[in-house]
Amino acid sequence: MKNTFGNVLAVTIFGESHGPYIGAVLDGLAPGIPVSEEYIKRQLYFRRPQGAIGTARQEQDEFSIVSGVFEGKTTGTPLAILIPNKDVKSRDYSETRYLARPGHADYTAHMKYHGFEDYRGGGHGSGRITAALVAVGAVVLPALREKGILIGTHIRTLGSVYDRDFSEDPQALSEELRALNEKVFAVLSDDAGEKMQEEILRAKEEQDSVGGTLETAVTGLPAGLGEPWFDSVESMLSHALFSIPGVKGVEFGDAFARVSGRGAFYNDSFEIDPETGSVRTGTNHNGGVNGGITNGMPVVFRTAVKPTPSISRPQQTVDFGKMENAEIAIAGRHDPAIIHRARVVQDSVTALVLADLLTLRYGTDYLTNS
Ligand SMILES: Cc1cc2nc3c(=O)[nH]c(=O)nc-3n(C[C@H](O)[C@H](O)[C@H](O)COP(=O)(O)O)c2cc1C
Image 1 (cartoon, rainbow, N blue to C red):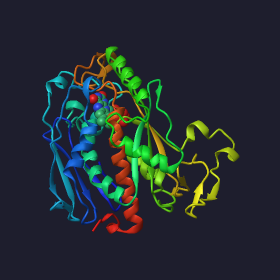
Image 2: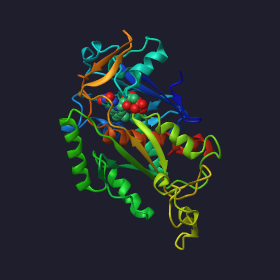
Image 3: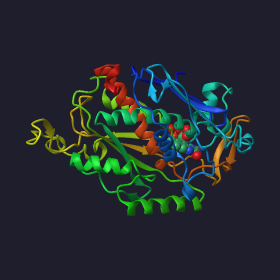
Image 4: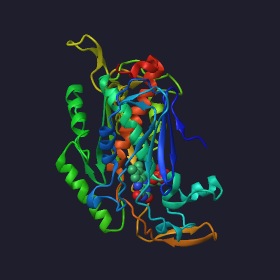
């Protein structure tokens, strides 16, 4: 029943949706990394529900760093962040205690924890817990940026709407990542973004929800990162990405769309960059990873984020207290889409995994700025 992830840099998350606090402990961090509370606040803001397209649950995420930071820098001891749950209306859930929300983790949590689970609002399986991941991710993201490593995610598809593709040129791509990291609704084309938000509102009107795909790119990673087999870059990232509630698929490069093409097409030919004299590839179908190890090209991957399971439309389910068929119409406060909020969670887990792999290869002090 482990809630810890990572080898050298390990994150532990704890808490329940309607408990007093959620939080995270980050262990294995180098001493001397600057920690900006303003930046943590900003990242948490990006995860928070926004306007008509978000849930009515409004948590201010007033976090406290209770360990591991002194005079604005990491001490090298476990960094612990606590986030109180304040906007809690547990009555919304008590009447539906044994009604399994289709697509949610109520029934599976009940089977795993034998009825001792805190069932309110999805308990420990709630998307609420991702705020803790975002908070610790916001410690690591700036440290990676100092090393020239930039991470950014856009909503590539939402329902039937497509954003435009990332640029292939690494320089232009880095500019796009910087721009995305300033946006609450992270799309490359604002026009597509408006259509996506309309689609979310349409789903909401129809008492329904909508999903899509997130695409992340990472620039500035050195070639040679990742362990060849079980701790490959792809394995470690997928492991962490599948931990984000609602993520149902992970793809590196353009695998699903292109692997049925021939090798002569799919292979990324190598060439020497005339400007830098270093090795690069002409295309990036493999998403910057060969044999589980980075090849120095941008690491690019996509996740499939499903439509929010909690919808107010009546659905067929079971009452697992009475062991009989039942109907459920979910009355609590839920997002008609979670994908735009999951994006900053995806950036955070990506940062945590890459920081772990980097410290594994180059030593704990790699991330130190001093
Ligand atoms: C940021 C975020 C917010 C979420 N909010 C909700 C929500 O309001 N209602 C809901 O039913 N699911 C929400 N989810 C998704 C569920 O937590 C998730 O679907 C559920 O735990 C089952 O896990 P699975 O979809 O990975 O199988 C959210 C996920 C994230 C990442």
